[in-house]
Length: 225
Image (cartoon, rainbow, N blue to C red; front, side):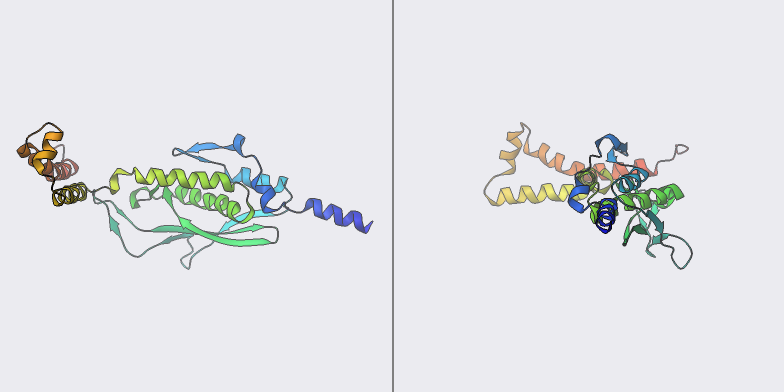
């Protein structure tokens, strides 16, 4: 009888990391902001299906009563939109396993600006932290989460708002200088793309013109004549 009880307790216990990592999530994968994800409620149910008795998470409130953590410093983008470093923190309980995890409040793969901060974005961040925390601590969904992280790294690399035209000009000029130090002339480089040396100089100055153009477009008002 005692042996049967122990066997029953063993069967009812949450599976180990390696076993949970092998759980197939493919049929539960959805698309959000161009990246794969699995709804937090599905993860909760899968934990129960694999032996967990108690599974929940709760936002950790700050001294002001809010679960939103924000930096005191305000940042401005090229369009003068303001934002701060916004984060949130949750406590996750899975039977005897209790842990806290903190992370950023994002708009897809981009930081949330002040004018787009909503309760829904905060909630999405908290559920996302739950899924991430479960993956890290239990193995359930770990491979999927790793793939999502790689996808988002790629998206961040293509975020055009982080590229500065004049910095790109600087990079091109530095590369040109290195080539000239090796004895390659601007005339030779120009001939390679079938233009004159003066036209090459003209191209190199286009970055500044484009920078001015971008600023004009950003500040242009329809009522201006």
